[in-house]
Length: 107
Ligand SMILES: Nc1ncnc2c1ncn2[C@@H]1O[C@H](COP(=O)(O)OP(=O)(O)O)[C@@H](O)[C@H]1O
Ligand SMILES: [Mg+2]
Figure 1 (spheres, protein in one colour):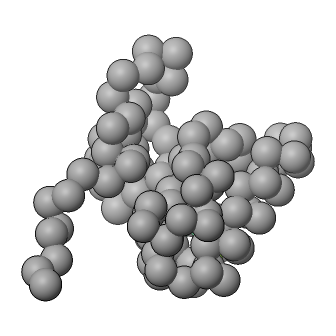
Figure 2: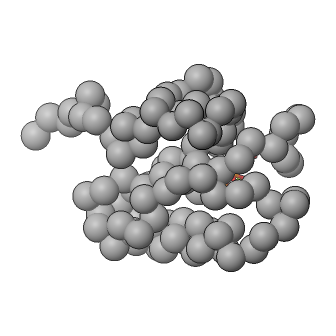
C-alpha cells in the first residue's frame, strides 16, 4: 500500500508553517501563523508528534497539553490549539500549538 504524503493533516486547516524550529524527543516544532483567525496575530509554535502510532507517546502528549492548560504561569507558553482529545484514535495525527517564547532556544 502506498503512503500518501499529500493527505491533508489536521493542523493544515488552521495553521501555515513558516519554518522549522527544532526537534525534541517527542515531537517536531515549527513556527506557524494562523490562516483564518484574525484574533491570533503573529507567530506561534506547532508541535507534531514523531511517533503518531505510539500509544505511550500519544498519552504523553495528552498529558502535556492537559498540564499546559492547567498551569497558568508567565513562564509557560499558553496553549492555543490542539486536537489532543483524539489521543486514543491512532488514525488521527496529534498536534499542539502554543505561544512562541521569543529568544534563543529554550534548551
Ligand atoms: N513555545 C515555544 N517557543 C519557542 N520555542 C519552542 C517552544 N516550544 C518548543 N520550542 C522549541 O522546539 C524544541 C522542541 O520542543 P520540545 O517542547 O522540547 O519538544 P519535545 O516534547 O519533543 O521535547 C525546543 O527545544 C525549543 O527549541
Ligand atoms: Mg524537549
